[in-house]
Image 1: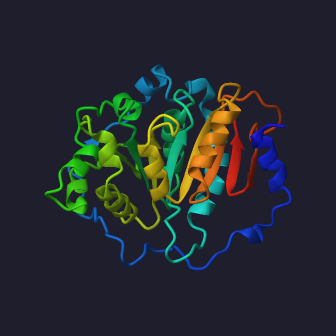
Image 2: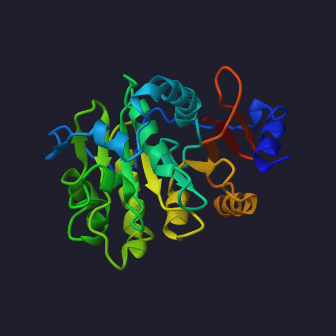
Length: 293
């Protein structure tokens, strides 16, 4: 029995009362900085869906409806958990990191498609952040590698993060979808992501929209240290696991690294499944599992 199957078996007997709710997160905490976008963003970009299909970051049009249904199933519990009552001093569950144990498991594909699905929700916005300086696939695919972004805000300490972010967060032609590209990478990119300023930046992003979600496409956790810092700053972590590829020991090591600080979910990617929906969901030891083809 695999580690994911054990988690699901445990989930069947775990009571819902295991999650303790102490205070509502309907509004951001009063001590969090607010990044007001009332004046609009200085730049807007177009998401080229045709190009994204060509490079494999969107499913073929012939499979679009099937994938859309799968991502609806994935985002439903994610949204529910994002707005569950939490302790007053808890990290916002609207802050979500998407990572993997190792490279090549489909985390950027998942980040992009999940963001597009979330942007369809009429009551929520989504900000997708490229947080993988080692392989900024998201910014590259969207044609944003030359744009200033996350790393520029972290490097330039002459401005408060709230001011700096207004010039680098990008609107898109997709309603309710914002993008923060990686920015200019340098030799100290990892150090920037583990700095105290990164913590302030994450809190500022959380203040943009009290009904919005912020998704971080982060580096593989067993490859770089910076993604472990990002995981400590968010309220939920989605771990993408490639079926038949990710070593179980790598998955165990990654879950050990994440510990219990954040609510951890698993998406089993590229799995061959049977059944009317082709996915599964459950949780154990704070972890949740989703399965999709």
